[in-house]
Image (cartoon, rainbow, N blue to C red; front, side, top):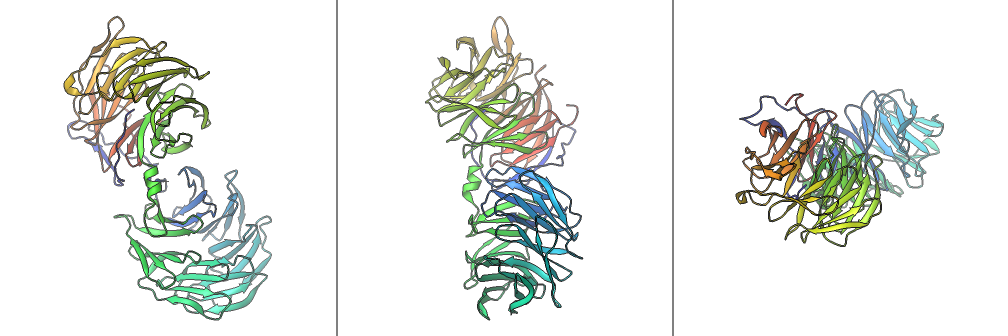
Length: 623
């Protein structure tokens, strides 16, 4: 546990052995998690379709591997992964009540997915060829679909059987949308024609417009206003009640994908080079050009007018959220900035706290986000684990909160009425202790919430607390001054912990598996150790040298008597606590490192960037 600094986002990561240490290269595992603007990405393939519910709670993305991923937008948690389509997914739509989702594919099917049970509901083979797009009625009970067979189909989702269809004449539809009253079906085709049809008599063409010149790649209807974009970048805005277009803007460059929102008066185009171009519908003027990250072009885009946000998919499978002015959503990015990361002793959980006061709980073996814990009003400065999936957190808001990670819910909140800077928990989860910015340590009984003792540990903030594996005592680390150890049951001094003053304040540390060694680090690159003598207390041990920069995180690898350390030199080092020697070292490239964890199940190392980005690697079987 320690206080983390703040830095920007970094995306390119490579983990290689440090030159003077390891022979083995640590290779990334298949599920490699990263974050762009606070949003997770587990997909490894270009995004072909995007959906975002009007309410803003749920988003979905499809990739070129024919998978669909469903996300909780607020937390960034992956809700589900849907598989089943056998060819490219061309369209996704989420019902207005966020209870179901439909997907259209070039495998000639439309599938319906239940977002409550996270299971498939229905597979519908409505077309004789590729299905290009689908639209839902306002209440979501009826599906309108178009395909390469030149057909438009109307199908109630309850039965899955088409009740109406129309064979278009000499045109292949590309995009479909509905007016708000569901009376008019709007279709854009591959040649740029836009036609309006009576929804109850599909083959009846109400009106046609031929102002676009190529494939209609985006179509939007708001009340009686129709907006469309073609592959040449031309934009047209149509009053559906009139014969001609209201506004037309000539394209300035080709577009590979686009999104348009008539109500917001904006179109967002993915230019041929993979950058985003934001344009006004009124005069076609450019609001902003948003370049894609180097080597990772944008390939798809969606406007959610209800949320005033743009969701853009990258070739790598990453997602970026922007506002309607083409600026990155700073609120989301800054809210996800990492404060600290800790690991459970059994290697089952890794927890990270963030600037918005939330705690994210991960499976360190797979990198999958399990829970987002909300409750703290200010940043969390300390987290600690007890056995059985119980975790304590302490915040600047003056509360200690106890969490059950098996179900992801809060068990208890304890008001400390102080600015808390760290937390510790007994292994049996019966006692919780918190450090205060005035140098005190406070302890409570978890079951009752009653305070059982208070002790003055330092003149400055206690920034880190570490409970011995047996639970008899704890080590307190402060912003200034030497470490101190205390009896956990009553808060009495246990043993002095002398340290070389040249090392400076020790602000983070960890116990060995057997509890006989404590390793700590301060602003330098040297790890200081103490050996526990049952009669004499903590005695200075051999220093561990190797980092060329400040050590920013320490984590224990349970069951191996090994401690990992993470330095500003971008090196992860493994140390044997048995003989206090270095075992392995790995260089991590392209990350501003801030946190470290371990997944016992698959022998994985978990590394956090200060921006909140996380990477998971499989460590060698033997080290």
